[in-house]
Length: 272
Length: 271
Image (cartoon, rainbow over all chains, first blue to last red; front, side):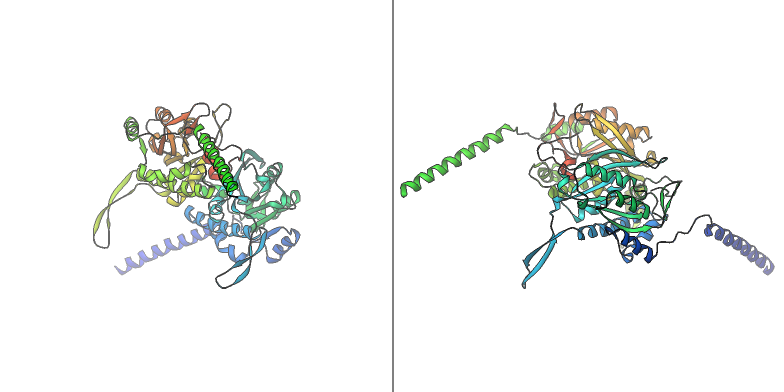
């Protein structure tokens, strides 16, 4: 009986060893690349090059982006984390709005009050459908009275060229402070198109802030070249824009599909 | 001096009365719409067994505020969200449930829970106005997938035109909750339902949510899709023929919720 037990143990050990070795091969996934983020130096260079660019502090965004980037993150977690990051971006946008000085009274005495110069209604959140709509959830919690404009631009999958479908903007938009939102800034094609539409409506560049979760140097340069006076606030700048498919790497995948739950089961989140 | 004061007093009261008269005359030009009574509503419910109208006691107050042309954007949004949440909870309550036995701290009990996972539920919104439902929708069902169909009504012909869609690839396996705040002629909703049908979604798996509807729209939908469910907060009595707008209605829900009301025209558009 002892002999049989040893034989059994030996077989189990072999099976286990084979399993571990095989799964290691699968997990090493040599075919997939490991992308490294930009260093502090490179980020500083970017900030010096574009004075209207803001990148959120890494401490605030690392954890959240980590969870969002992961392909296995389920939809509920993805949404929660996206909403957190979007809230941080929104607060940063508000922080950069012009403020006016006044004297107010606290229960103990007077103080100098610095408040945003504009009322809720003078702020317009313009979202680039479909993905941009994800920003509206948190956006309306922060600025309850903001008006909302929408521009539908879809990227042609083969040519990567943006295609305009539809827009609905407030008629007095040229008098408002605009917060333009789109989660990803890849080539900058869609953002550029949206900015041109806003210009046609008479919106001044200085009144536009563009919020995006992940961007790349190429997209940032393109947008700033065409519209040097807008402000851009991004949570992180990714190192690479993959040429053939024009996707950010490591990126988030297709933000719209992941947030709205329309990811096709076989493609695990390619696309931007 | 007393005489002068009297004269001033007299003139002021003249002004006041003319002002009041003018106000009331101005208001008399607009008609006063009365809601359907309980009998009319019961008749509707008996005629269409897949129709649900939310109890008046839940909706009266909120709809009152939403309908008011003076209501500002923030109040409009808050109250719309409340009503939308009520509608969504009603929709979820009508989804099939399964029974099993669970354990409370004191003993066993019969558990009846919605048969489907969050991910098996899909909210399909008819852009642009339908998107207003998504904020509360995601709070109620945090893992639901979201589909979008963009249909805009051509202002001259009043006919809907389809512009764009993005739906989950497995939508035919899902429980679909279709959303659009207003149901007037029913043309946009019909177009959206046909699109869903083309994707293989079965009628029995569709629930259509709308805040305010009218008999005409409801009939049109049920004629073509008798097996789907419709849940509405209130049924308005009139569909104005020339503009195809509900009366008293809400105005253009999309413009009011998203803050894009044109300052020049007050009572506006619908579907």
